[in-house]
Image (cartoon, rainbow over all chains, first blue to last red; front, side, top):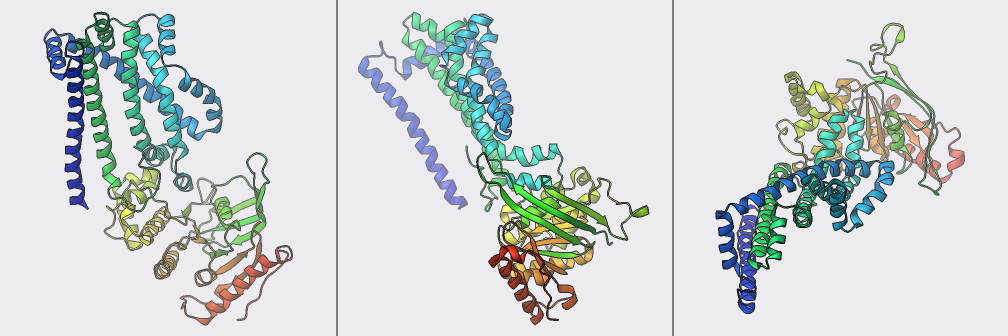
Length: 267
Length: 281
């Protein structure tokens, strides 16, 4: 089974490479049909990106955007996981939070951004607040589901043996929630990554979103595509990294796990 | 090392409140039961008769019931003026569930050590964990994960986990019902040996009359839902230990137990009144 898996993994790598190349090919084709002056291809875009890098703009704007993303992501995950556990385990918390959650999930994403800029001002605090308001509700729903699916039999076992509250949380509850947290982290990161560009486009004078709006006003398609490409590549890299980290963690016991049929395995 | 606690269950009833609008379900109806310190009692009854409910009440998992549960110390364990020797006011209770209920992300060793709490960190505790694994026949399996073990071995881990806390009372909820008969037979032998070594009180729930009779000093028979006690068999008077499971008396007694269960099932109201079955011995 081991070797079978390894062969499959080798095949997967090739398919992944083909997948990436096919995007480049379609991009090149479209550029060729429309003419590179209207829709630059990969080559022109990468050339422009290199110029941006040499001018020092690329790193400046990307790093500002990343700071905003990481801060919003950290706040959204912390608040969302805590609220999700509460709402998944306590009936009154679920009732109390349900209207907030529904509002948070259904409000058009541009509304928190605009509202935060008006109330707080055109600054980073407002941008982060707005992104958290958009990202946190989706974290809550996913963690809530994980908390609802907790194996009550194991929790009862913990009570029967009078485990401390800390031991219950650390050894019984947390390991069951990890797959949900890992899955949520990926989707929250991706959402925060997209929202931050949006927020920068609307009301910041730095960051990738600002650059895109700048090049839009200049009708410079190369700039738009270049910064869009950078965002795609970085997010994909982060996503791979998070998956690797999760696989590494899960592998420690799940590979040796034949019988248990609990809810682990969401991601 | 006789540290078993006695149990007095007096008039215990339990009703599960239904979710909004449903009919509440009576699970236990006026259960009276006395278990002597160090005694091995089997609770025998059909599925769904409230045996597990009674165990959860005994072990303190379920505090929402009518009636009273008290514990008494053994003569050896009692303090001055018969005061109970347990710091928490309750005896230590070990629980073995129908399924092993081990944490799959922890090794066998850590699963057993976990229930020692803060005391589990010492080198002495580590030695005790190894010792208990050896006593349930799992020497050398400490580094395995539960998923790598057979169901029977997992249940052995669960037994070690329940006994390492040196329980005054060991409650077991159909612990061998998911095992094949040969494995279950071996586990019963191992359980009796450990019970004799530790001297703890055992309350063993089962729906299998042969199992109940071959293990227990006394078999207490429960009716179908709502569970009541409809009779009991004093096995130890007829079957001295060590027992031979092929002894015809085992079969005779288990047939009697089965008859008690069947009568209670066929005629739930009258059977509950006052049946104390004699036995041919």
